[in-house]
Image 1 (tube, rainbow, N blue to C red):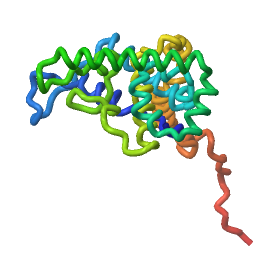
Image 2: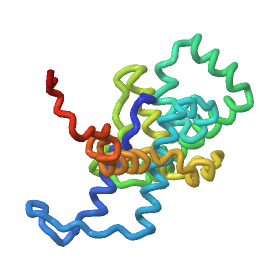
Image 3: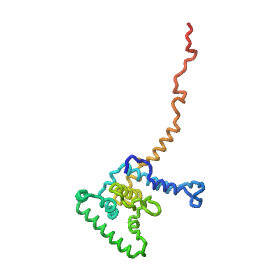
Image 4: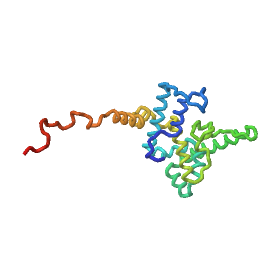
Length: 226
């Protein structure tokens, strides 16, 4: 995830737009903006701070425990593209216990998917993965960005990070202390920038301040009289 990005994620911007739209006004006509409630403003502020935290702390995505958030998805997007040497290094880094736990959860999830699919009417998808994760992305039409098939190793890693970002912004990382971000105004990048812009807009240039100009000597015309 690029560390240079400082604007809110697309899903946060889209949500803000939805909050302003009146559902009773036709989409092809201008619509009035509805005032957001304090609760909605607080929620958007918190989500923006969490997104900004990830921008400033990309090392969050390197946490080895993240595989347990969705072992099946991790296998599809990351593990399947690893070389044997990379898998071996991954196991050594995570340790036997953590690797075994991820394998057990992965096997149980796959087995549950098989049973759920068998109970569904023919031709219908169980959608069990989405229901289990309860993480909503920005794929549109009820899908998530990470639902697509990974084209290569880099693409798979990008989608895995998109999943982790959406999960983090929704406050679903139970191992993370969100208080250090949600109550930290250091991550209000947009609000800080807006305040700075407003300050500079209201600041008068020094050359418009008469007190700052050099005094003019009366009686001197600048013309020599000899």
